Image 1 (spheres, rainbow, N blue to C red):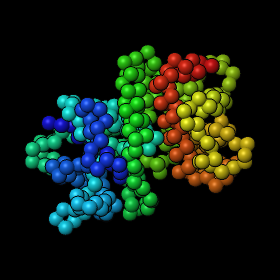
Image 2 (image 1 turned 180 degrees about the vertical axis):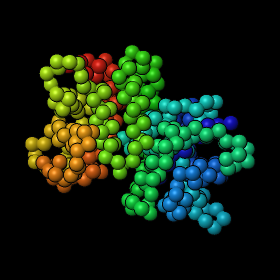
Image 3 (image 1 turned 135 degrees about the vertical axis):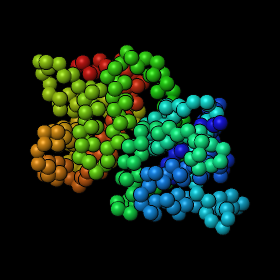
Image 4 (image 1 turned 120 degrees about the vertical axis):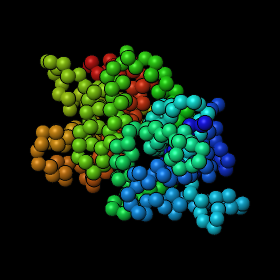
Length: 321
C-alpha cells in the first residue's frame, strides 16, 4: 500500500496531472479513494462547522472537461504526496514546513481497503497537538483571516527537493552537532503553541539562543548583544536576506539586530512574569502587531536553521564567539 502525505494548504500547481518529485514520490490531487479518509481525519481537528466545507468552497477549479465536478458538486481539492515507499518518511513533512511557503502536512496515512479510517495506519507529522493548534488558529468562524492558496511552482519543487536532501544529509551527522539537532526538534515542537500565546515569542527566541548564544561564565557580551550581532552577521550570509521593512515600520536606521534587541526585551518581560503592555514595550517600532513579530521570528528562525543545517561547523563556531 502507498503512503499518503496530506498537504493542508490550498495548493495549485501548473501540472494538470501529477508532479513527480523523485522516483517514489508524486504530488497529485487526492483520488476518490483517499477523500473519505482525509475527511474523517480532518473532522478530528476542525471544530468550526464551516471548516468541513472549507476545501469544497474555496478549491473550485474549472476545466474544459470539468474534471473536478462530480455528482453535481464541486469536487474537494485535497492535495497529497503519494509515496511508493513502505515506511513513513519524517523528512517529507519537515521539508515541506521548512520551505519558504511553509506547506503544512498535519498527517500521513497508509490507506485501508474500504475508505474512511477502517484499517488505516496514521502518522501525525508533528504530533496531534500541533494539528489541533493549527486548525484552532485557522478557525475561520472565530478568528477571520484570509487564507490564500499557495501555488506549487517549479521554484517550490526545487526548494522542496533540496530541503529533503539537506535534512537527510544532516541526519547522518546530527550526533556531532547536538545543539543544532535539539534546535531542529524544538523548531517543530513550537508548532504546538498557538499564535495567540505570548509564550510563542519566548520559544522562538529560546531556539535562536540554543543555536547562537554562548552562555559560558564570564562571557562579556549579554545574550541580547550576542543575538543582535550574530543574527546581523547571518542575515548577510542568507541566500535571501531578511529586509526588516517588510515586517515592521520605523526609522531607516533600524536593522535586524536592533529589532531583535527590542523583541528580546519584550521576551524578557514575558519570561519573568512582568505585566505586559505590547505597544509600550515595543514603542520604538511603528505600526507593529503581534502577528508581525511572530512572522518575523518564524522566518528568521527557519532561515537560521536551514543555514545551520548546510553550514553546521560555521554556526557551531559562531556560537562560541
